[in-house]
Length: 301
Image: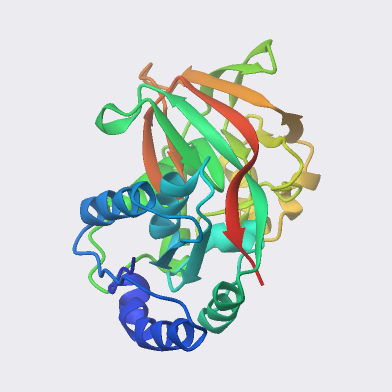
């Protein structure tokens, strides 16, 4: 399953060499180039549902395609291969999957896989869904606002670049106020104001931000990162270090580990906050995020 438009056309360019390498390795292929997100979602689900022993699902694209692939393969014996040609490729960064087309092609051709954890998210989600699987980070608060705003922006030259994403983050910062959270972390309830709460299976989101730097996709746990209320100037100072994970050293940042986290709360206007994950909108809070060990067979270098 390929998104030819991913990475400003890199998906279309990568497909012929990938197909050639896999056929040369003796694999039989059924190739489909998606025409829309809905088409890609339907085709990935159908492919896994019709799979036979020894079949695999390979997606060529960015984090959106990886998200569709892992949702189709989660909890099955069908391994997922991700050929990263997007602008962010956060799923591959955080899970140990190949981070280049050539490396991904070699790993899939050789059949190298490992089991990785996923986060299972439940709630009243978008489009009537009650459950979604997440590979990277579930975000709420300031980080979710920035992500949603970036997704809604009518980019004329393709997906947002890191520089453009930073510009949106600055624009959102001008009016952002702490949100009111009610968290249930492994059964313990906490009510508090916070700038954001990120719940990570893997560590990266937003095109390379290492928001959960201690996340491990094989430990059966979620990483929970909180930024307590700070001034806009302090949050602005912390933003650059989010790309390295160095922001966790600031005293305003709290780090927790958990198996299950329920996130509820409201924004400054009293409206229910919303959740984002893997670059996609999940839906309004409350949402429950649960670590599921070994939920996905993933091709790795």
